[in-house]
Image 1 (cartoon, rainbow, N blue to C red):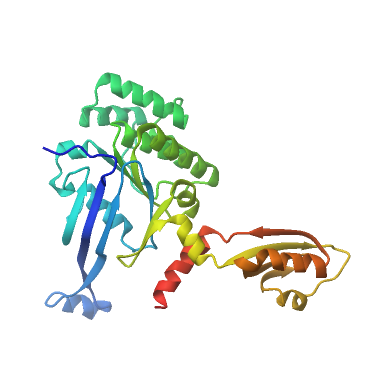
Image 2 (cartoon, helix red, strand yellow):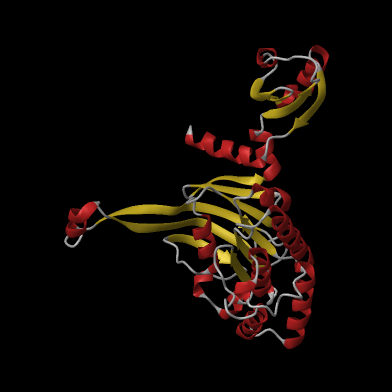
Length: 337
């Protein structure tokens, strides 16, 4: 019998998780193909290499890494789709790869590049199929479906064939299909991939609302740092299978955002040359009457004051670097160690 998970206990627990793959290395050309008939060379790929972390009920955690870092592999192990090489995992008190029905009814995995909806049928048909698979009672199904359709504003498209929907409309329906059984844990793997900025914002607002409404615990992977910045207070960063950071997103910003950006607009009737700007900081862009300068964050206000006093500045704006730039600096710092 699974123990009830209290709010002060981790709902997801990973200890020394590893997943190694053997990958066939084929030599190029015809001779390489012939040689492979008698002798094959393999190399070991460490997709996930000894990572540990705990996630607590109601958290939305950003799971960040470059392509091939091991994010999707980790989510597949947490979902029970892949068996680990070693390590221990518990999700909701279950061992995921036991694939017990009681566990499978309490989580959902949404992959932005994979479809679960039937392509030639309306989305509603897939919703009804999932209702049967997860044995969702009629009253709960109707209540949840109505709420999700209203949150995502899709009531007028659920009876249209999936193949006739736009990418954004389809992703909304994919989310509904995954959430009809009210999962306590939600794994979102690139849910906004390929969507325009407006639809990305719609889905982010929905994820935030779903977390608040149902208290779901969410792990989110995304290459769009706007997703992570808007939704997640905590971030876990992995690189080549290794965990390199686990903490508050603001901590990363404080540690790696050593510079601020001064965006300047000069008075057009007065001339300014690049050499005049270089004494204030690193000039990133200059096309009169506009310029962008990098300065140390501790000196940003002081430098802005000097610029206003010494040069014909019409407007100045002090900005933080984008979260994408900051995360890139995290990876670069690891590779230079």
